[in-house]
Amino acid sequence: MHLGVGKLASRNELSEFLASVERRAYKQGLFAVRDEHVALDIVQDAMLKLAEKYGDKPLAELPMLFQRILQNTIRDFYRRQKVRSMWTTLMSSLIPQHDESDYDPLDTLQDDDNKSQSARPDASLEQSQLLVIIETELGKLPARQREAFLLRYWEDMDTAETAAAMGCSEGSVKTHCSRATHALAAALRAQGVTNYEI
Amino acid sequence: MKSNIKTHLIKELLNTSTSQLAPATLEKLRGARSHALEHQRTRRSAPALAWLGHHGGHNDSFHMSKSMGWAVAALFVVFLISGASYWRSYTTEHEICDVDISILTGDLPIHVYVD
Amino acid sequence: MLRAFASLTLAVSLSALLCLPAHAATQPWSALTPMQQEALAPIAHEWSTMPDIQQKRLLATTKRYPQLSPRKKQLFLTRLTEWSKLTPEQRNRAREKYKAFSKVPPEKREEIKRLVLQREAEKLSAVPSSAVAPTAEK
Image 1 (cartoon, rainbow over the protein chains, first blue to last red):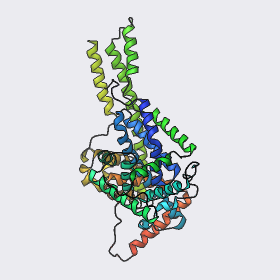
Image 2 (spheres, one colour):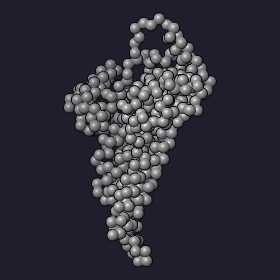
Image 3 (tube, chains in turn red, yellow, brown):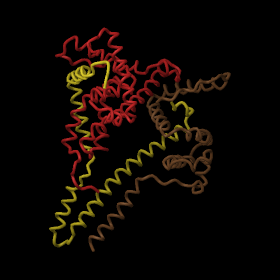
Image 4 (cartoon, each protein chain N blue to C red):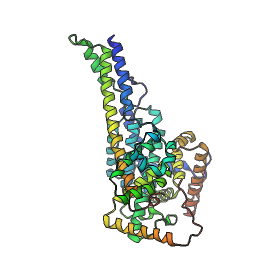
């Protein structure tokens, strides 16, 4: 039984880490489930799991551990959502249960009440429009591609850390990333956005 | 690593979006953060043990040695943790048993619940 | 002397208590009671290959078996094999789906049940063609 303090993350360090990462975590959740309440639940869940399970780990290990927990939590909630909406459509329009291939459950979840675009007093119009485009395209990416892209380029993780967080090989990370960037580039080009291309 | 879009620009744009989140959302995130902190796992049972060891050492009439104090406190902590995790796993397993029986004896065939 | 006693107490108690929440080890089929063997008869030949958690959970369900009606006992036995063949992840997901379904209002639940059972009946009476199995998610 370890009774020393050593390199274990203190409460302050954990607090600062969570504060630094919570907004991006929330946005990541939003991209996947497109529901503010569910995205908040995801972040709360992930933070709790990190604190409970790994709150005694060194500070340096927390980013990767948190991202791993976050991605798994997002996946769990996403799957749960699919169940709920599957039953919802069964109830409302008696769609056969196994026609999942043509049906995107997330279509029913996007509603006008989603106010994630609301509080923008300072952004220029062009920037806002650009943001909407990019966020929409990110939301359309397959989950693994979006994960890899955001972990590499938003969380600034290297391929090794990203692989550890995603639970896959570094080769897979590179593949997912390059597919994501290609898809994003094509989508942006199609919408007339040119200044993001190299 | 080569990529065909300016990922740093995308990163900047995304960061801008996080700075524009609604205050209510930020408040909820802060709440989630403090809730998580309350449950931070710590192996530091040192304060409790130190107290016991300290008081045990100074109490002449009881003659409790320092290591005895450590042992008793450690035992207490282990009791608490075991009890808590035992109770948690007990209730979870109980729920799982309920659901399993319902699935196995319910009206719908199993494959309805399988992907 | 006291120190030795304290360390011994600690060691014994720690090992005893830490075993408490742990899963039971696997049991041989012969160690099961006749009632348990009756309830789990359909998977008797697979019993020894099952990990301890799966065995534990199956034994937990057998506690309810005696109180089931004859019809439900039959359902239990019929479905046990298919249930045991699922992966642990599939079983967990099935449990989640069942829990989600329980939250649906009763009338809607009954409606869905009727619909599903109707489709099941149709499938059974339909001419069997080359069926396409639903692809697994990954």
